[in-house]
Length: 265
Ligand SMILES: Nc1ncnc2c1ncn2[C@@H]1O[C@H](COP(=O)(O)OP(=O)(O)OP(=O)(O)O)[C@@H](O)[C@H]1O
Ligand SMILES: [Mg+2]
Image (cartoon, rainbow, N blue to C red; front, side):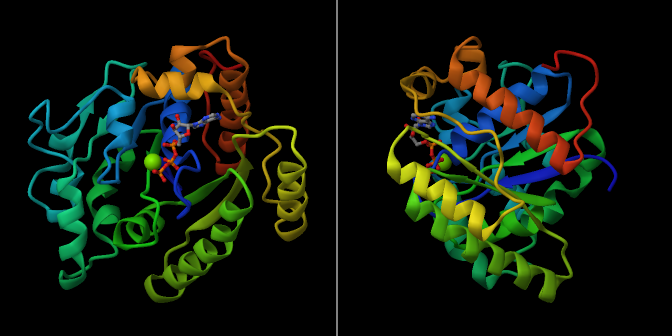
């Protein structure tokens, strides 16, 4: 594989911390000297908001919608976030209409993949957010990614893993795409029996795919979201930021992302 490693954060369960994780890993990888692009791929636009970008308020003409519709050169959809050097393709609610119309369009599962292709040589890591469903936008993420990574915040989130693997397998069969399950990690973790049971079940079902790193439950994450600063930048010395540092190290090792000397912990 040459150029960027593309990782999609997927889980059709809502609120599992996909967006928080895209923003946090993007900030950490960028801090470690990598060229990082984060792609908002959810009509909610939460990843954009996490970086302080409101596409409607800021009257941003080119968003990820234009990538799907091929209405703009992909490089013209990228904006500087001013947050740790991370670049962003933002999204707005207009993406909901794009998703509704996608089924009638040619190559509708592959549009994100085709759109991002020219950027592979320009970045080290491209992180894709997804919406909380398994519709066209989520399937585009699976088709566009080299790997998918699943945050698990409880038993319901665990159910998604099998479904995602099935879609990824279909992509392999029908599109000859090699999208791999990078693994799952536990998040919003607390010392309850429920989370212990989720960990045990995950390790039993996917023995080599459960990350050691675990993201603890912390109000710091919600504060960072409210203030539109990615968590590792908002509270670098917090325990939960340290959790994300460890996850980034494990994700890099497993996906082949090469981190240079700068900033690595
Ligand atoms: N480790 C954590 N501890 C506590 N709260 C967290 C943590 N991580 C994320 N959150 C909060 O949980 C909520 C859901 O997180 P987030 O938006 O990242 O999930 P999501 O999977 O992207 O949601 P959606 O499915 O709606 O896109 C947010 O308010 C976020 O700030
Ligand atoms: Mg989200």
